[in-house]
Length: 302
Image (cartoon, rainbow, N blue to C red):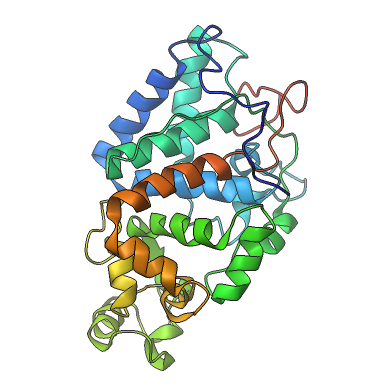
């Protein structure tokens, strides 16, 4: 499906119906990120995981119903790794008090991802809004849609192309891995048999990640600037310090290496591309108009 910015979404969508919405969300996100920077990375990732499964419709926020089919958020790709659900719920409760049944959870998530980018990377951009919330969340739709951490560059290009995003936009959005954390199980196979991984970096990771795979601790995605959304991530890739297979393959593949080099050299240009790519990603298969609903609680349909 094409991710061209939907003509149904517009900047300032809530200017009349709920003028305080964006500032309420920004304050809620800022408070959470000030207490734990990883929450900012979590909110950006939450938006990404939402948009790649059924489009940006807030389906990732829905909880499984007892006795019913499992929802997206219970899939191993999302649970226990995804973070930020409580921040979205808190912002929603605050907005509902002054603007009931007006602001969608899908829009709150898009605004929160933007606010996290601004706080952690000074990357600010206007967010077109008007998304409606989906009524369905399916565990079984996660695997075919969400890229696994072990894909090659060509597979990543295909995955993003299926959502209307280019190879350049895929590499640009991968820069979000300059913040946040990953579980050892997502990359532990690289520690002992991947020659592209810097030996000193591998030794540091082995000290944290148990060889027997018993516990599953987390490590920073970017060892250089773990709490700053910046282009240092790309310099780390060039030095063989990409954490996931999907990170390092970007610097190794002829199809993507040039984008990595450009992003490593030109941080301001990368930040601008990141903002544009986030807006485009936030438009994937959106529900608008009378489609879906405006949820009263983000974790359950009305």
